[in-house]
Image (tube, rainbow, N blue to C red; front, side, top):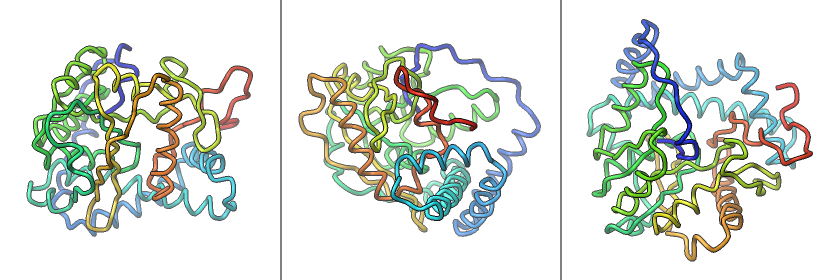
Length: 309
C-alpha cells in the first residue's frame, strides 16, 4: 500500500532473486510461528541495534523530532527516537505473522474499532492512512474484516523474491484491487467511483511535483495534494484510519468521515490534512515514521533542512 503521487513515473523492474532474500523470507516464515511476545522482544533488540548503527537515519529522525517538538529537551528527543527505532523494527518483524501466520491468529491480533459505519455500503471513499509503523497491519485489518474490497497502489520492489512476498502478503485477505504505480491515476479514480475504498498514504515528501508548501508542526513542508484531488475526482468521502501498535497486536481505529471535504481550495484542504495528521501523531508520536526526510524539499530561497545528514 503506497501513495499514487508518482504513479506516472517509471519504476525499475524487479531484479533477480538472491540467496539472502530467500533466507530472509524463510526467517520471517519461521518467525510467524513464534509467540507475539518473542517477535516483539526480537524487534526490541533489532531496534536498539539499528538505532546504534544506522547513523544517517538516526540523525534524520532526531532532526525531524527537534523541528516538530521544539519544546522537548535533548534527552527527551533522544529517548523518543530510540523508542521509534524499536517500534519500527517490531512493526517490520510483525509482517511475518501478518502475512504468514494462520488466519485465526492474524484476526485475533487485529482489532478494528471506531466509526465502522463510515465504511458501510458502497459510498466512494478515500481512506487517509498516516505513515504510522503499523500501516500494513491497518490495511490487513480492513481487508480481512470489512465486506468491501479495497484498492491499493503498489510500487514494485527491486528484488523479485521480496516483491512477490510483499505482494502476496498484501493480497492475502479480501482480494484487494492492486494498481501499479506506473498505471497512472485513471484506474485509481475508476476503482474509487466503483465503490472500492482507496487506502492512501499521502504524508511523505515526494518533491515539488503535485505538491504545495503547507505547515506541518509549524514547518513548511512539501505536501502532495493527492488526498483532496482524488476525493474530488472520485466524488468520494475521506475517512481517516489510524493504526496503533499494542502489546496484543494492533488497534485499527476508523474515524468519522470528514465533513465538507474537499473544499474549493486544494491548498487549504492539504493544510487541513496536515493539521489532522498532527493530532493523530500527538497521540502516539514515537510510532510515526520519523526516519523519512519529511522536510527534504524546501520553499524557494530556503536553505537545506538536513545539513550534514
